[in-house]
Length: 189
Image (cartoon, rainbow, N blue to C red):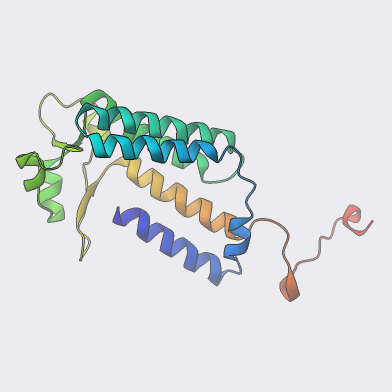
C-alpha cells in the first residue's frame, strides 16, 4: 500500500529532522507482541488458501491486531491503527472480499483486470449488492509509479502508523548533548 509506505517514510524523515531517533522508537513499551505474530500467521494462511478463508483470516488478523493495539492504547497512533484495521476487516467480513470502486480505479489510473478475471480473490468490484460501500476501496490514489484505490481504513492505518512512528521517535528520556532539563522541583531531588 503506497499510502502507508509514504506515511512511514515521511514520518521517519520528519521525526529525524525534529530530533527523534529510531532507537527511541524501538524502545516503546509495547505489550502482548505475540498477538502480532498470530495476526501475521492468520493473514498468511488466508492469503495462501484464498477464497472464504481469506476473509476469515483477515478478520482474525485484524481482531488480533486490534487486541494488541487495545493493550497498547496509551501509545499514540494505536487508536487510528485499530480503527483502520477494524474498518477494513468489517467491510471484508460482510462482503467476502474488499470491494473496489470501478470509478475510483479509473480516476487512479489502475487496472481492475485481475479482479474481473478472478486472479485477485482478495478484491471484488463494487456493485449494488456491496455492503458498507463507503468503507471499501473508494479513494483513488493516482501515484506516479503505483496507482491504487484505498479505503478509509487504509487512510486511518497510514495516519496511525505515521503518528506512532513520529511520536515514538520522540518518546522516552532525551539523551546526549540535546537532552532537555526537567524544570520541575521533583526532577532535581
